[in-house]
Length: 372
Ligand code: PLP
Image (cartoon, rainbow, N blue to C red; front, side, top):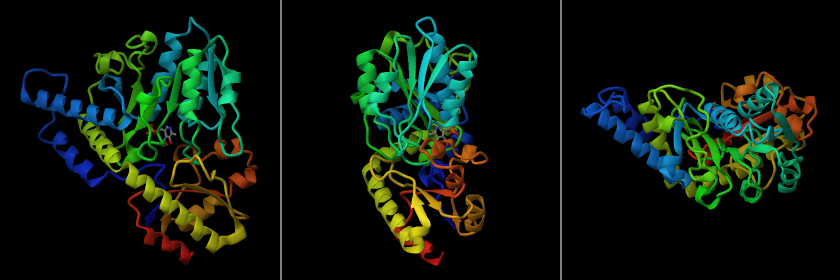
């Protein structure tokens, strides 16, 4: 069985598993406890993991806040920032292709009095800096713009949008869940990007752990942002709750591996994507149509329309040999809002399948497509 749904989730890397196990068994201490070894070992392990994430993102350790994943990070940042800044304005800007954890959060805020602008995207699923510039108002308090799309792989021009936001003094958050370990960037080089969300399970770490990155010196906001969870004051008072040490350790090791192998993994994903596209073209010719952009994209995401076929039936048929999805795992019951946003008809959406590759796949494994 060839697993090609790596944008939904990835398996835990064997080194990640090995590193996590002791923290489930003998090193079970609570890092907030004091003095005895169980506690200090757990505390040191969390500090090491924080350092590893900071190295991967090129940011300060104090800017790394552990959460349960991107859904929580997106909720925390979007609700926290808008609550903290509500006296300055009520306007939020986002895009049509965001993950539901961003879109639904913004729509919720609309129900309690915020005003929402949802920017449309072009045929490649991308927003332009000009569109963003035109949408910013004097009362805009938050922009939340996805870095890379989970269904199409489209990359938004985040560095340029960050420059604009710095110039205009607007808070910019980006959902970076899909780009980690797949593109090179440094948050140090993007002073206008104040917050991002990431999830460990998208890059060979465990499920249920992620990070909200919050730039420390921007707008003196830290630690005034309203937390999602009030309680014992862990994570600088921004995210209360006993830390999931085993998961955090796992995220740290996954981050270290992602940073070390970044260049190699990007090359491998690019190579695999090229081969997959070739094989699909050979096998299906004019019976398929690609939805993903050809440039400025996350390597390894391929979105294909199988003309005249139903994607649910196709995914079920392929399931014994190739694991793929009709789109985002979180919302596969509903027709994709992302594909609709790039102008696909309902019929075209219903014949689309997403293949998402892993750098650990061997090129030869893709030959399975020759047998379809
Ligand atoms: N944002 C994007 C772009 C995603 O692809 C996902 C997961 O599919 C999420 C957010 C949510 O991540 P999690 O389910 O780990 O909270």
